[in-house]
Picture (tube, helix red, strand yellow):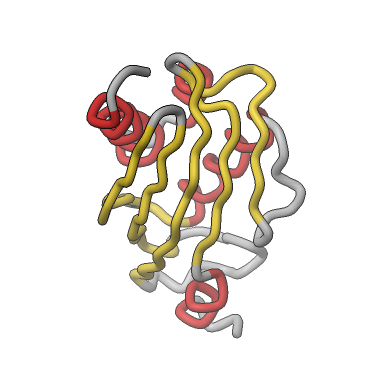
Length: 137
């Protein structure tokens, strides 16, 4: 990855492909096979395969899921994305039966990128706010 602008464009392209076009299999195109995932809200998610399964579960539980990028800061090999996600809780998610409620939650993701692939990422998002909207907190 060359310039910070190219890295920002890469993060935008990946976000659109995986999250906004609802294609978790695209993760294989953007993440290394030995990718490491860090997420205190989902500690079982560690690998690229885990991450794909987590994305599928999120997209299944929250139909019409859309991730808007609020800001991206990038420098050589590193990027931080501030984002807001929204969707309709239309099927069981996190063990919570569907409420048909539109939910919105926000977070920040830091990425370490080598070449044209994400090697590692760290997620922090408003899990409690999401659970409140689903009536579970």
